[in-house]
Image (tube, rainbow, N blue to C red; front, top):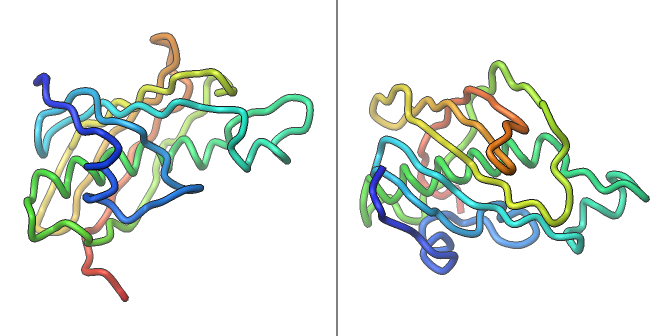
Length: 150
């Protein structure tokens, strides 16, 4: 990997997600168009923890997958250049999703994403979400880059 990083301000230029659904705080390291490591700092004040679960807050698995997808989207849009900024990256498929360990407030969730295939606007990835170098979740997914619907 390279030593290139992307901060939250640049992430918000690259993808349209905003609080409360923006699930990546920083890209720590990446090779444009090939791989990325994103960081999501999990905090107790996130709205989903009010009901998932009272007394034992656990980050929903779908949000972990979403964090992986947003890391991939940042990588794709940055790699494709200025003309891709503001375009939406839509899920097409999620396969082989596995959840191994709960993610809880206070965790730093590291999102390891690798491109496995791309053709025109369709990209495929493998992803692992880790806390303390232990895999919490993994999945293969594909997405399509599209113009903003609005």
